Length: 278
Image 1 (tube, rainbow, N blue to C red):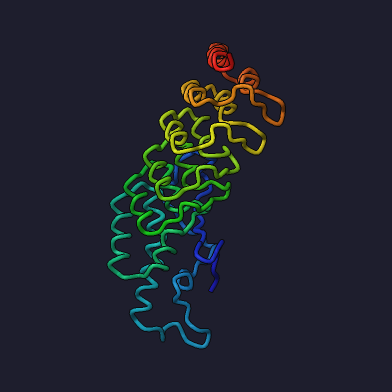
Image 2 (image 1 turned 90 degrees about the vertical axis):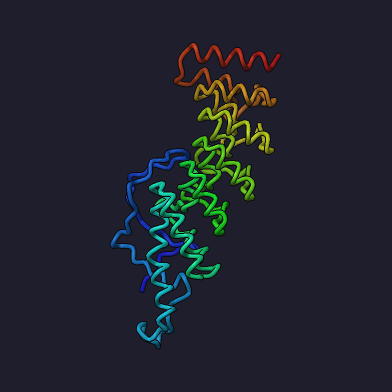
């Protein structure tokens, strides 16, 4: 039997490739399905792989029952989170406790990943499903798990402007300064999407206002490039440096002037940045 594992406790459930998750796209497919080419043996994941010398049907009935239940409901849990079905997710997690599946099996259930390597916590976080996020955190979901683009649940929640979820994840120990391959830090992501309340929360929780991404852009650069006036104002009020340059030698104002945004927006940005620099 084949096992498709990324790490010891993480199995990829391949689903539709149409869902875009470039930092903030939170449009999951209506359901997740396993591709025939990906053979999953979740029994081994939950510690139920029999010795090679023992026929599978010789396993104790209760062991088989628990392994099969976990196999069915691990995928069902990911699907429920994908579809924002709080009730279904709560039932599965509640029943898992009632079935006494054990700490390790529970961890494996909540750490199943989709084809983009998003966990249930990634999906629930970016959609702002506070109830599911609380349930998953209580069951040991990993706030540091990364998807194919290096995004953690915090990165995804921040770029989607899910302020309440961001606070929950920070309280659970999420890394404020982790950088993914799309936006940089969570503050970069929230700033470029103009999510003011999220930007303010991240700054109040200690996020670096002048953190540089891989090409030297600060949150102020990204907010300027996207015409995110409100977020830019919050950054300026928290003493973001308007004269800082990226690796191309561009200041935030330079980036704004080269951007697609309209002239009226560029003028507002110029006023904000010049006020701060004087």
